[in-house]
Amino acid sequence: MATTTRPSPSSTPWPGWRTARTTTPTWRSATTAARCVTAPIRWAACRRTTSSARRASTPSPPASERPLQPVARRRSPSPPKKRKDAAPATGEPGLVLAHHGQTSLVENEQGDVLRCATRRNLPRTLCGDRVLYQPTSPREGVITRVLERSTTLVRPDRNGRIRPVAANLDQIVVVIASRPSFEYDMLDRYLAAAEIIGTRPAIVVNKVDLLDTESRERLVNRLNGYARLGYPLLFTSTLTTDGLRDLHACLRDHTSILVGQSGVGKSSLVQALLPDEEVRTGPLSKVTGLGRHTTTVAMLYHLPDGGHLIDSPGVRDFTLWPVTPAELARGFVEFRPWIGQCRFHDCRHNGEPGCAVAEAARRGDIDPRRLESYRDILARQA
Image 1 (cartoon, rainbow, N blue to C red):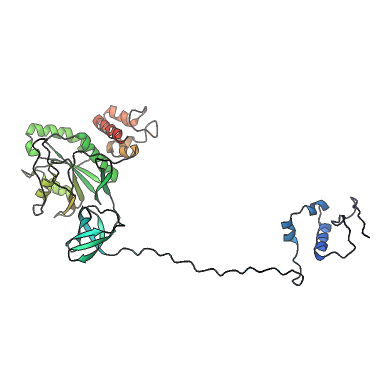
Image 2: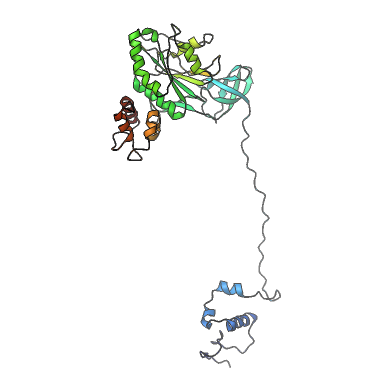
Protein backbone atom coordinates (compact mmCIF):
# COMPACT_ATOMS: atom_id res chain seq x y z
CA MET A 1 0.00 0.00 0.00
CA ALA A 2 1.50 3.36 -1.03
CA THR A 3 1.87 6.00 1.65
CA THR A 4 2.00 9.75 1.28
CA THR A 5 4.86 11.55 3.03
CA ARG A 6 6.10 15.15 2.78
CA PRO A 7 9.90 15.45 2.58
CA SER A 8 11.75 17.34 5.25
CA PRO A 9 13.82 20.38 4.31
CA SER A 10 17.03 18.41 4.75
CA SER A 11 15.95 15.46 2.69
CA THR A 12 16.47 15.15 -1.03
CA PRO A 13 13.54 16.74 -2.93
CA TRP A 14 11.52 14.26 -4.90
CA PRO A 15 8.84 15.38 -7.30
CA GLY A 16 6.72 12.28 -6.67
CA TRP A 17 6.25 12.89 -2.95
CA ARG A 18 2.50 13.28 -3.30
CA THR A 19 1.92 9.70 -4.55
CA ALA A 20 4.97 7.57 -3.95
CA ARG A 21 4.78 4.76 -6.47
CA THR A 22 5.66 1.15 -5.83
CA THR A 23 6.14 0.56 -9.53
CA THR A 24 9.28 1.30 -11.44
CA PRO A 25 9.21 4.88 -12.78
CA THR A 26 9.02 5.36 -16.51
CA TRP A 27 11.86 6.76 -18.51
CA ARG A 28 10.32 10.26 -18.39
CA SER A 29 9.84 10.36 -14.61
CA ALA A 30 13.29 8.88 -14.05
CA THR A 31 14.88 11.51 -16.20
CA THR A 32 12.97 14.26 -14.43
CA ALA A 33 14.05 12.91 -11.06
CA ALA A 34 17.68 12.78 -12.08
CA ARG A 35 17.55 16.32 -13.36
CA CYS A 36 15.95 17.62 -10.17
CA VAL A 37 18.46 15.80 -7.92
CA THR A 38 21.43 17.34 -9.66
CA ALA A 39 19.84 20.79 -10.03
CA PRO A 40 21.19 23.37 -7.54
CA ILE A 41 17.72 24.90 -7.07
CA ARG A 42 14.74 23.98 -4.92
CA TRP A 43 12.28 21.29 -5.97
CA ALA A 44 9.52 23.86 -6.51
CA ALA A 45 11.47 25.43 -9.34
CA CYS A 46 11.39 22.14 -11.27
CA ARG A 47 7.62 22.01 -11.09
CA ARG A 48 7.36 25.59 -12.31
CA THR A 49 9.58 24.95 -15.29
CA THR A 50 7.63 25.65 -18.44
CA SER A 51 6.63 22.74 -20.60
CA SER A 52 8.59 24.12 -23.53
CA ALA A 53 11.77 24.28 -21.46
CA ARG A 54 11.23 20.69 -20.21
CA ARG A 55 10.70 19.45 -23.74
CA ALA A 56 13.83 21.23 -24.91
CA SER A 57 16.03 19.69 -22.19
CA THR A 58 14.45 16.21 -22.16
CA PRO A 59 16.12 13.64 -24.41
CA SER A 60 13.88 11.94 -26.94
CA PRO A 61 12.83 8.34 -26.14
CA PRO A 62 14.08 5.49 -28.26
CA ALA A 63 12.44 5.18 -31.64
CA SER A 64 10.81 1.88 -30.60
CA GLU A 65 8.95 3.58 -27.71
CA ARG A 66 7.73 6.65 -29.65
CA PRO A 67 4.05 6.60 -30.60
CA LEU A 68 3.34 6.76 -34.28
CA GLN A 69 2.34 10.22 -35.44
CA PRO A 70 0.72 11.17 -38.72
CA VAL A 71 3.26 12.62 -41.11
CA ALA A 72 2.23 15.73 -43.01
CA ARG A 73 3.08 15.57 -46.68
CA ARG A 74 5.19 18.48 -47.80
CA ARG A 75 4.44 19.85 -51.18
CA SER A 76 7.34 20.47 -53.44
CA PRO A 77 7.64 24.20 -54.08
CA SER A 78 6.15 25.16 -57.40
CA PRO A 79 8.31 27.23 -59.71
CA PRO A 80 7.56 30.97 -59.53
CA LYS A 81 5.17 32.22 -62.14
CA LYS A 82 6.76 34.28 -64.82
CA ARG A 83 5.44 37.83 -64.93
CA LYS A 84 4.00 38.70 -68.26
CA ASP A 85 5.31 42.19 -68.91
CA ALA A 86 3.90 44.16 -71.76
CA ALA A 87 6.10 43.95 -74.78
CA PRO A 88 8.00 47.20 -75.31
CA ALA A 89 6.49 49.35 -78.00
CA THR A 90 8.40 49.25 -81.24
CA GLY A 91 8.36 51.47 -84.24
CA GLU A 92 10.21 54.12 -86.15
CA PRO A 93 11.29 57.34 -84.41
CA GLY A 94 9.42 60.49 -85.29
CA LEU A 95 8.89 64.12 -84.26
CA VAL A 96 5.42 65.57 -83.73
CA LEU A 97 5.10 68.77 -85.77
CA ALA A 98 1.51 69.51 -84.77
CA HIS A 99 -1.42 67.90 -82.99
CA HIS A 100 -5.09 68.50 -83.73
CA GLY A 101 -7.95 66.42 -82.39
CA GLN A 102 -7.08 62.75 -82.71
CA THR A 103 -4.46 63.29 -85.40
CA SER A 104 -0.78 64.19 -85.17
CA LEU A 105 1.56 65.25 -87.95
CA VAL A 106 4.71 63.17 -87.45
CA GLU A 107 7.96 63.71 -89.32
CA ASN A 108 10.22 60.68 -89.69
CA GLU A 109 13.99 60.62 -90.01
CA GLN A 110 13.76 60.82 -93.81
CA GLY A 111 11.80 64.08 -93.63
CA ASP A 112 8.46 62.56 -94.66
CA VAL A 113 5.36 63.81 -92.83
CA LEU A 114 2.64 61.29 -91.91
CA ARG A 115 -0.82 61.67 -90.40
CA CYS A 116 -0.80 59.43 -87.34
CA ALA A 117 -3.43 58.35 -84.86
CA THR A 118 -2.46 57.65 -81.24
CA ARG A 119 -3.19 54.47 -79.33
CA ARG A 120 -5.83 54.92 -76.67
CA ASN A 121 -3.55 53.83 -73.82
CA LEU A 122 -1.06 56.61 -74.56
CA PRO A 123 -1.07 60.21 -73.32
CA ARG A 124 -2.10 62.97 -75.64
CA THR A 125 0.72 63.93 -77.98
CA LEU A 126 2.07 67.48 -78.00
CA CYS A 127 3.90 69.58 -80.52
CA GLY A 128 7.59 68.79 -80.03
CA ASP A 129 7.04 65.25 -78.74
CA ARG A 130 9.48 62.48 -79.65
CA VAL A 131 7.51 59.35 -80.50
CA LEU A 132 7.69 55.88 -81.99
CA TYR A 133 5.19 55.06 -84.71
CA GLN A 134 4.29 52.20 -87.03
CA PRO A 135 3.40 53.13 -90.61
CA THR A 136 0.11 51.75 -91.93
CA SER A 137 0.44 53.33 -95.37
CA PRO A 138 2.94 55.61 -97.13
CA ARG A 139 1.26 58.69 -95.60
CA GLU A 140 -0.37 57.35 -92.43
CA GLY A 141 0.64 55.55 -89.26
CA VAL A 142 -0.09 54.82 -85.60
CA ILE A 143 1.88 56.24 -82.68
CA THR A 144 2.89 53.36 -80.40
CA ARG A 145 4.90 55.22 -77.78
CA VAL A 146 5.46 58.76 -76.52
CA LEU A 147 9.04 59.13 -75.32
CA GLU A 148 9.87 60.87 -72.05
CA ARG A 149 9.62 64.66 -72.15
CA SER A 150 12.33 66.94 -70.85
CA THR A 151 9.97 69.91 -70.34
CA THR A 152 6.27 70.61 -70.82
CA LEU A 153 4.65 74.03 -71.10
CA VAL A 154 1.05 74.12 -69.89
CA ARG A 155 -1.55 76.79 -69.22
CA PRO A 156 -5.06 76.82 -67.72
CA ASP A 157 -7.97 77.32 -70.08
CA ARG A 158 -11.04 79.47 -69.40
CA ASN A 159 -12.53 76.74 -67.21
CA GLY A 160 -9.35 76.33 -65.15
CA ARG A 161 -8.39 73.01 -66.72
CA ILE A 162 -4.69 72.52 -67.41
CA ARG A 163 -3.97 72.40 -71.13
CA PRO A 164 -0.52 71.33 -72.37
CA VAL A 165 0.91 73.51 -75.12
CA ALA A 166 4.24 72.02 -76.23
CA ALA A 167 6.97 69.63 -75.10
CA ASN A 168 10.76 69.33 -75.03
CA LEU A 169 11.42 73.08 -75.07
CA ASP A 170 14.62 74.71 -73.92
CA GLN A 171 13.71 78.35 -74.69
CA ILE A 172 10.53 80.41 -74.37
CA VAL A 173 10.47 83.61 -76.42
CA VAL A 174 7.88 86.10 -75.17
CA VAL A 175 6.78 88.40 -78.00
CA ILE A 176 5.26 91.75 -77.09
CA ALA A 177 4.20 94.55 -79.41
CA SER A 178 5.35 98.12 -79.07
CA ARG A 179 1.79 99.16 -79.93
CA PRO A 180 -0.77 98.69 -78.52
CA SER A 181 0.79 98.90 -75.07
CA PHE A 182 1.61 95.58 -73.43
CA GLU A 183 0.98 94.35 -69.90
CA TYR A 184 4.04 94.04 -67.67
CA ASP A 185 2.20 91.58 -65.45
CA MET A 186 1.58 89.17 -68.34
CA LEU A 187 5.24 89.44 -69.34
CA ASP A 188 6.24 88.60 -65.77
CA ARG A 189 3.91 85.59 -65.75
CA TYR A 190 5.49 84.22 -68.92
CA LEU A 191 9.00 84.75 -67.55
CA ALA A 192 8.10 83.04 -64.27
CA ALA A 193 6.61 80.09 -66.19
CA ALA A 194 9.82 79.70 -68.18
CA GLU A 195 11.94 79.76 -65.02
CA ILE A 196 9.71 77.27 -63.19
CA ILE A 197 9.83 74.60 -65.92
CA GLY A 198 13.56 75.10 -66.42
CA THR A 199 13.81 76.81 -69.80
CA ARG A 200 15.66 79.89 -70.97
CA PRO A 201 13.44 82.99 -71.37
CA ALA A 202 13.92 85.72 -73.98
CA ILE A 203 11.95 88.89 -74.79
CA VAL A 204 11.21 90.17 -78.29
CA VAL A 205 9.65 93.61 -78.78
CA ASN A 206 8.06 93.51 -82.23
CA LYS A 207 6.72 96.25 -84.52
CA VAL A 208 9.31 98.81 -83.45
CA ASP A 209 8.83 100.48 -86.84
CA LEU A 210 5.66 102.03 -85.35
CA LEU A 211 7.74 104.00 -82.82
CA ASP A 212 9.55 107.26 -83.29
CA THR A 213 13.00 107.74 -81.81
CA GLU A 214 11.79 109.26 -78.55
CA SER A 215 9.15 106.59 -77.96
CA ARG A 216 11.66 103.85 -78.67
CA GLU A 217 14.17 105.26 -76.19
CA ARG A 218 11.48 105.52 -73.55
CA LEU A 219 10.45 101.89 -74.16
CA VAL A 220 14.07 100.72 -73.99
CA ASN A 221 14.53 102.45 -70.63
CA ARG A 222 11.39 100.78 -69.28
CA LEU A 223 12.57 97.32 -70.33
CA ASN A 224 16.24 97.62 -69.39
CA GLY A 225 15.48 96.15 -65.99
CA TYR A 226 14.83 92.78 -67.68
CA ALA A 227 18.14 93.00 -69.51
CA ARG A 228 19.90 93.58 -66.18
CA LEU A 229 18.33 90.35 -64.94
CA GLY A 230 20.08 88.51 -67.78
CA TYR A 231 17.14 88.10 -70.15
CA PRO A 232 17.93 88.58 -73.86
CA LEU A 233 16.04 91.68 -75.05
CA LEU A 234 15.52 92.06 -78.81
CA PHE A 235 13.73 94.72 -80.89
CA THR A 236 12.38 93.56 -84.25
CA SER A 237 10.31 94.65 -87.21
CA THR A 238 9.10 92.41 -90.02
CA LEU A 239 8.57 95.50 -92.18
CA THR A 240 12.12 96.85 -91.97
CA THR A 241 13.74 93.48 -91.04
CA ASP A 242 15.20 95.26 -88.01
CA GLY A 243 16.60 92.84 -85.43
CA LEU A 244 15.88 89.67 -87.43
CA ARG A 245 19.55 88.73 -87.59
CA ASP A 246 19.82 88.97 -83.80
CA LEU A 247 16.67 86.87 -83.49
CA HIS A 248 18.18 84.21 -85.78
CA ALA A 249 21.23 84.06 -83.50
CA CYS A 250 19.04 83.82 -80.38
CA LEU A 251 17.07 80.88 -81.81
CA ARG A 252 20.01 78.94 -83.24
CA ASP A 253 20.43 75.39 -81.84
CA HIS A 254 17.44 75.77 -79.49
CA THR A 255 13.94 74.34 -79.46
CA SER A 256 12.04 77.58 -78.93
CA ILE A 257 8.40 78.54 -78.74
CA LEU A 258 6.98 81.97 -79.53
CA VAL A 259 4.31 82.97 -76.99
CA GLY A 260 2.34 86.13 -76.45
CA GLN A 261 -0.95 87.85 -77.01
CA SER A 262 -2.81 87.51 -80.25
CA GLY A 263 -1.83 90.13 -82.79
CA VAL A 264 1.71 90.84 -81.58
CA GLY A 265 3.10 89.37 -84.81
CA LYS A 266 4.36 85.90 -83.87
CA SER A 267 3.31 84.26 -87.14
CA SER A 268 4.64 87.22 -89.11
CA LEU A 269 8.01 86.75 -87.40
CA VAL A 270 8.01 83.06 -88.34
CA GLN A 271 7.21 84.01 -91.92
CA ALA A 272 10.07 86.52 -91.96
CA LEU A 273 12.48 84.01 -90.45
CA LEU A 274 11.34 81.17 -92.73
CA PRO A 275 10.10 82.70 -95.99
CA ASP A 276 9.86 79.30 -97.67
CA GLU A 277 7.45 77.92 -95.06
CA GLU A 278 3.70 78.32 -95.31
CA VAL A 279 2.44 80.22 -92.26
CA ARG A 280 -1.13 81.34 -91.77
CA THR A 281 -1.64 84.98 -90.77
CA GLY A 282 -4.82 86.98 -90.38
CA PRO A 283 -5.95 90.60 -90.31
CA LEU A 284 -5.82 92.74 -87.19
CA SER A 285 -8.99 93.53 -85.36
CA LYS A 286 -9.89 97.16 -86.06
CA VAL A 287 -11.73 97.40 -82.77
CA THR A 288 -9.11 96.27 -80.26
CA GLY A 289 -5.93 96.65 -82.27
CA LEU A 290 -5.18 92.98 -81.60
CA GLY A 291 -5.26 90.24 -84.18
CA ARG A 292 -7.69 87.37 -84.28
CA HIS A 293 -6.42 83.93 -83.29
CA THR A 294 -4.84 83.20 -86.65
CA THR A 295 -2.71 80.27 -85.46
CA THR A 296 -5.14 77.61 -84.26
CA VAL A 297 -2.63 74.92 -83.17
CA ALA A 298 1.02 74.93 -82.18
CA MET A 299 3.21 74.19 -85.20
CA LEU A 300 6.91 73.25 -85.28
CA TYR A 301 9.29 74.53 -87.96
CA HIS A 302 12.94 73.68 -88.63
CA LEU A 303 15.44 76.53 -88.59
CA PRO A 304 18.04 76.59 -91.39
CA ASP A 305 20.90 77.33 -88.95
CA GLY A 306 19.88 74.53 -86.57
CA GLY A 307 17.16 74.22 -83.99
CA HIS A 308 13.37 74.23 -84.04
CA LEU A 309 10.82 77.01 -83.71
CA ILE A 310 7.25 76.47 -82.49
CA ASP A 311 4.57 79.03 -83.28
CA SER A 312 1.79 78.82 -80.68
CA PRO A 313 -1.75 80.23 -80.80
CA GLY A 314 -2.09 83.69 -79.36
CA VAL A 315 -4.01 84.25 -76.14
CA ARG A 316 -5.91 87.15 -74.63
CA ASP A 317 -4.47 86.40 -71.21
CA PHE A 318 -1.98 83.99 -69.69
CA THR A 319 -2.19 82.61 -66.18
CA LEU A 320 0.15 80.28 -64.40
CA TRP A 321 -0.94 76.78 -63.52
CA PRO A 322 -1.18 76.04 -59.75
CA VAL A 323 2.27 76.37 -58.16
CA THR A 324 3.47 76.67 -54.57
CA PRO A 325 4.61 80.05 -53.19
CA ALA A 326 8.17 78.69 -53.03
CA GLU A 327 8.07 77.69 -56.72
CA LEU A 328 6.65 81.07 -57.68
CA ALA A 329 9.32 82.93 -55.72
CA ARG A 330 12.06 81.03 -57.54
CA GLY A 331 10.39 82.04 -60.80
CA PHE A 332 11.57 85.59 -60.06
CA VAL A 333 15.32 85.30 -60.48
CA GLU A 334 16.17 88.46 -58.55
CA PHE A 335 14.51 87.02 -55.41
CA ARG A 336 16.85 84.05 -55.21
CA PRO A 337 19.75 85.67 -53.28
CA TRP A 338 17.33 86.56 -50.46
CA ILE A 339 15.19 83.42 -50.39
CA GLY A 340 15.90 81.61 -47.12
CA GLN A 341 17.02 84.77 -45.28
CA CYS A 342 13.56 85.79 -44.07
CA ARG A 343 12.63 85.61 -40.39
CA PHE A 344 10.13 82.82 -41.08
CA HIS A 345 11.16 79.80 -43.14
CA ASP A 346 7.74 79.67 -44.84
CA CYS A 347 7.64 83.38 -45.68
CA ARG A 348 5.47 84.10 -48.73
CA HIS A 349 7.04 87.57 -49.27
CA ASN A 350 3.59 89.09 -49.00
CA GLY A 351 3.90 91.54 -46.12
CA GLU A 352 5.23 89.17 -43.44
CA PRO A 353 7.51 90.78 -40.80
CA GLY A 354 11.20 90.22 -41.33
CA CYS A 355 10.87 89.48 -45.06
CA ALA A 356 14.30 89.75 -46.69
CA VAL A 357 12.80 90.06 -50.19
CA ALA A 358 10.64 93.04 -49.18
CA GLU A 359 13.63 94.64 -47.46
CA ALA A 360 15.67 94.22 -50.67
CA ALA A 361 12.88 95.94 -52.60
CA ARG A 362 12.94 98.86 -50.14
CA ARG A 363 16.70 99.20 -50.62
CA GLY A 364 16.32 99.16 -54.41
CA ASP A 365 18.05 95.81 -54.94
CA ILE A 366 14.76 94.46 -56.33
CA ASP A 367 12.42 96.42 -58.59
CA PRO A 368 9.35 97.18 -56.42
CA ARG A 369 7.12 96.79 -59.47
CA ARG A 370 8.35 93.21 -59.90
CA LEU A 371 7.56 92.47 -56.25
CA GLU A 372 4.03 93.79 -56.79
CA SER A 373 3.75 91.63 -59.90
CA TYR A 374 4.79 88.60 -57.85
CA ARG A 375 2.16 89.38 -55.23
CA ASP A 376 -0.49 89.79 -57.92
CA ILE A 377 0.31 86.31 -59.28
CA LEU A 378 0.26 84.94 -55.73
CA ALA A 379 -3.21 86.40 -55.21
CA ARG A 380 -4.40 84.74 -58.43
CA GLN A 381 -3.17 81.39 -57.11
CA ALA A 382 -5.35 81.62 -54.00
